[in-house]
Structure formats: C-alpha cells, structure tokens
Image 1: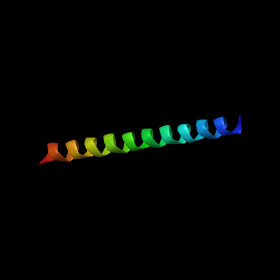
Image 2 (image 1 turned 90 degrees about the horizontal axis):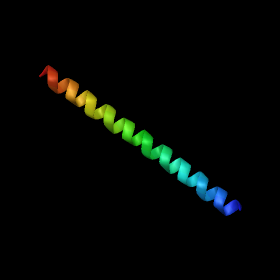
Image 3 (image 1 turned 45 degrees about the vertical axis):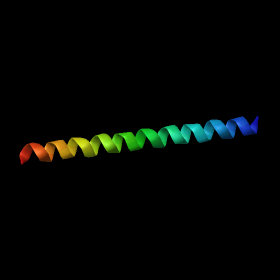
Length: 39
C-alpha cells in the first residue's frame, strides 16, 4: 500500500517536472523566434 502511494507520488512529481521543462522550452523557443523577428 505505502509502496504504491510512494510510486504514485514519484510519478506525479516526474510528470510535473516534465511539464515545467516543456513550458520552459516553449518559452525559450518563443523568445528566440521573437528576437529573430527583430533582426
């Protein structure tokens, strides 16, 4: 029981971390595209 709860918690943290890194990557790509438009 506790082992399953721990695994679910780890998966949740991993999913949240993956989402945040995806957001950061999208934001950096957008800022790069925006600065490229000014060149």
